[in-house]
Image (cartoon, rainbow, N blue to C red; front, side, top):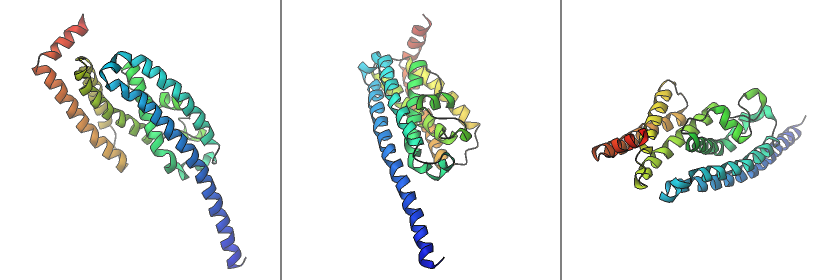
Amino acid sequence: MSVTEMFSCIQGFLSADQDVREDIRKVVQNLEQTAREILTVLQSVHQPAGFKDIPSKCARARELFCSVRTQMGELKTKFPAEQYYRFHEHWRFVLQRLAFLAAFVVYLESETLVTREEVAQILGIEVVREKGFHLDIEDFLAGVLIMASELSRLAVNSVTAGDYSRPLRISNFINELDSGFRLLNLKNDPLRKRYDGLKYDVKKIEEVVYDLSIRGLAKEAESGGDK
């Protein structure tokens, strides 16, 4: 094979690779748009009126996740399953965002921590790497950490809406979450930085709870919850 022939072959490989990446980018753009639509729906829970309408907001978000599953199905067809990590950077951000949105919906519905299996089911993808397009454990954890930041915001807005018991429940949840993350030896730098942000979320929520306590509203919320 001559030098010219060799580089012609290389160019053919590069062109094919670029075509695959372009096809992936188009599907990812659709996923990003759907993620924005879900986020818009869920952001309304931060408004005073939104607190009374959380179930319907979650139901609407669940409907939009149907589109996510369809788009994920399309994405799976754009590259060989065994090359997942070769193209991972294209969808990593949106997958983390979708994991956050799924986790937030589950929390709003049940005030529990979503499992990786639940997120994968909501998104229509796998958990086990060998089965193909899957939810990487670090992408799942990143999504959970984004949710923690959203909950710290929800705690503040709950007080504004006159819901004094919610920040107490959020505080308990976030403290449990923080304890869980402390068990992990995080070596992934971006994930480690996100975890560092959790400490600020914990502190922010503690300040909200403290403010409620000194105003006597925490006891009022607790006694109201006991009735």
